[in-house]
Image (cartoon, rainbow, N blue to C red; front, side, top):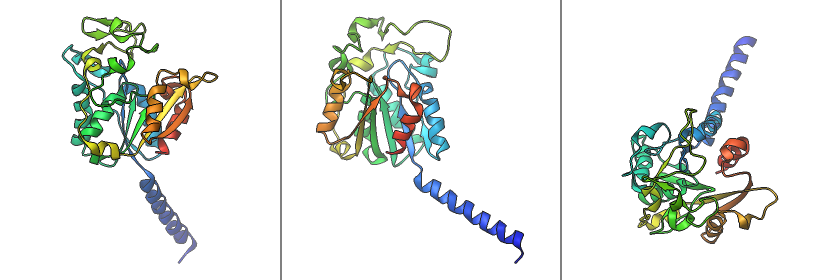
Length: 251
């Protein structure tokens, strides 16, 4: 066998071996954004995870993001749950890591109640962690971050101060009120068997107990979740992208 042919064989099998390693380590992520936002907020997160061999889905909830043209006051929490459930079913996804950011915690909790056998792990990223028959208004209505959500209601939508009618895109948009007043219905005990992680983001130099999402982090601890304290603002996917991707890769 000549020298060149030997080098080719070694190179070929090294590539095959490399391919197997990447495949063995890859995961499927479904990332659910928060209120007023859209899948666009996690575009860079998805790009970085995909570079590492992972598959990433980013459903945009009805009436938000690029689906803002579907905005309607009749949109409910279950509408958003259906958005994610149908993504999982129609893409035929299994063994997924389901990530929910902020309001997305409400959504992924209900999705886990519907499809527990499809989910490998739940990740709550500075997110709401509800119990049965709770709503966003119940849980966040008095928080400083929410500024009293009902006070921000106008014509069936929640308008926080930063949501403005500007031409610059992508941007946050008004959020349907009923998704925040609807109570979540949780009936499936198998949901509680899914391994779960809670990532609390907090401002450096401040006590984590002062964070608006600390009560959910504390609850997660009592429920046996893996818990992580992460220095950063409420949107780490923007300012601490690399560190967030590294955390998600560990799940």
